Picture (cartoon, rainbow, N blue to C red):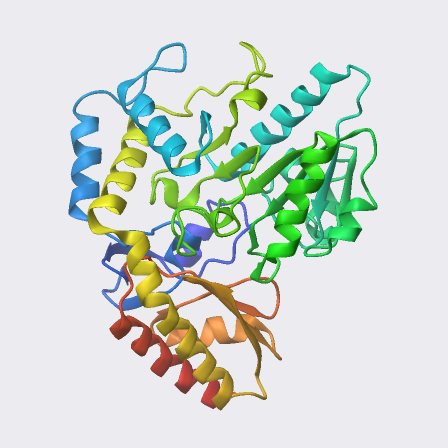
Length: 392
């Protein structure tokens, strides 16, 4: 297969430069048989790596039963998967989507319906964060705090203002009687790998409680064990009113969800929201199998065991190449290194050396490997990056 020929058939919104044919464990193989260490996990999706036999068998078994029924009916895997999410999150009700972006859309609608039922004259204003990223649909884009993503597609949905992440006073300054929700990533991803400070996240919870404002936490990327808890907010001993998730929720099968407390979920009634494919038996069978493998293999404990080593090796690179690497930050197996040069140059050079990396913004390399990564893989990554940074 030829990349130039393939490119003729796609709308050019991605700069693709490889065709991958198969994966195994933490490695991908291109169509020529070359092997690449993947430290991006399909943008934090493939938490269990590639070609996990138990996961594959779960999908095969479901395909032999039924793939789709529509949401006019219940299906067994969806019932089971919703129970797993409720147990893991501490939230009562779940709605399955096809993606993280759709989960954000549903969360916004739920928040506005909740506000509408309290006061039909409410404008349903939402406070989001600067440098946030929540998706590329019109609703999700409206709460994404980076202008260059939004501007070509305006006007977007109204009533959205942007506060400074980790600055509680900047949020308080935007609260009005029309504010229905505050939305943020518990750990900002695309915006540069910034964890929420304890003071900020607990202060937001208190602020929302005092003003009957809903707290929406986007854990599409940082959830599902990525940071060493099943959901990152569990570090702060708080719960959101609405939670969004996707990516590792299905480990490759397209599936997302938003979950809410009973009180908030009751705002929705039949006809308020829907999806043809969301929560179908195949997608939710994947969700079930992911939760079961996480439990059987104690994936979250493994993240906590291995993540200090990733941090150690990244800090060693920073110490060696301090003129290039300005900062190392993150949690668990979600780390970023801030560079004094374009990240794309490092990503390109790493790929030439059989290492897959992804960026976060223009000058940050994002490390979100499969959660099954081992020290030997981190050592391989370090050695390649040592060579790459040595060239620069």
